[in-house]
Amino acid sequence: MNETPGNVPASRTGVVITPAHRAFFQGIPKVELHCHLLGAVRRETFIALAERTRAPIERDEIEAFYTRGEKPVGVLRILRALDQYLLTDAADLHRLTYEYLEDAAAHNVRHSEFFWNPTGTVRVSKIAYPDAQAAIVAAIRDASHDFGISARLIPSIDREADPDEAVEMVEWMKAHRADEVAGIGIDYRENDRPPELFWKAYRNARNAGFRTTAHAGEFGMPWRNVETAVDLLQVDRVDHGYTIVDNPELAARYAERGIVFTVVPTNSYYLRTLPPEQWAELHPMRRMPSLGLRIHPNTDDPTLHKVNPSEAWALMFDHFGFGVDDLRQFMLNGVEGAWVDDATKAEWRANWVGAFDALAGGIAEK
Picture 1 (cartoon, rainbow, N blue to C red):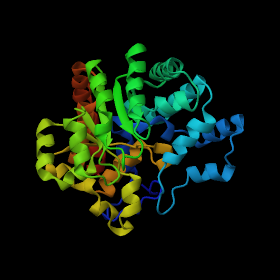
Picture 2 (picture 1 turned 180 degrees about the horizontal axis):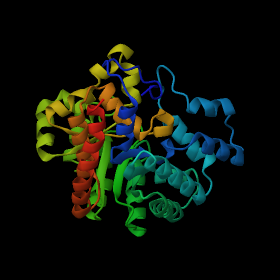
Picture 3 (picture 1 turned 45 degrees about the vertical axis):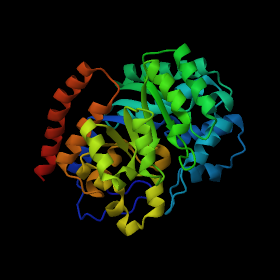
C-alpha cells in the first residue's frame, strides 16, 4: 500500500508493496464475518442524512468522525449518534445496507455477515423491528442481484442495555424469521458488561435454531470473558478474543475445537494503548495462529476505521508479518466460520484456493 489505512503506524516489516501486491489483496476471494452496519456508513451518506434531519451535529464534527487521529478514541459514540439523530425511516437502513454491500463487493467480498443493533433502532430511532429487518433483508437481496454478493444479517445485543432487552430482541427475531437472518451477536463496551449477563438470550436463540457469536476479549478484558462466551453462551465463533493468548491451555482447547476468531487489524484499543513503533509486534493477534487458533481478518467499522477489506488483508501481510500461506489459511478459516451450508462451503473451498494461488503467483514473479 502506498498509504496506511486510518491512523495505523507505517509498516516496519521492510516489505515493499508493489502494484502486484495490491492486486493480490484486492483479488483475494473474501468473506467478511465481522462488520457493523452503522460503522460502514459512507461519509457522503452521513452528511446527507444529517442535513435531511437537521441533526444537531456540526459539519466539522462529522468530518472528525471520519478522521482517525494518532490515538483513536473509538467509534461507539458515532454509532449512538446515528441512532439518535440520523435514522428516521426503514428506507435509511436499506440505503446503508445496500451501500455497504456495494463497497464490500468492490473488494471481492463474496459473502458478508454483518451486525445491526435492533435495540437502538427500535427504542431510539423509533423504527419498528419488522420494518427495519425487512428493509435490511430487501437490501441484501438487491445487492445479491446487482453485485453478486451474498449476505447474512446478525441482530446484535447492545450489552450496555438491560439483559431483558436482549431476550426481547430474540423474541422479535423468532416472530419475524427470514433466511437472511442467521443468528445473534453482542457488542458495545465490554468493560463492565461480561458475557454471562446475557445467558438467557443466548439460550433462547440457540433453542430457536439461531447461530451465535459474541464480542469478547476486545478491550483488553480478561480471557475469562472469552471462556464464558464459548463455554457458557456456547457461541459458534468469537469476535476479537485477543486475550485468550494469556491462557495457552484454553487456547489449545479452542484450537482443537476449530473455533474461528474474527479479528480486526485496526482494533482501536490496541492502537490506543500500544506504542506505535511496537504496535503490530506486541498485538496479541500476532500470537494467535502460533497457538493453533483459527483467525480471520475483518474490517469491523470500515468507513469509521478508514480501512477497506483489501487493506485489512494487506495489514496482516505487511504489518503483522503473516505470509502468503498464512493468508490462504485465513481465507479458508473464513469459509469454515461462515454461517452457510456445507455444500456452499465446499464449493467456495474448491474455487477460491485456485483463484488465490493464481493471484499469489503474481507476487512470486515480481
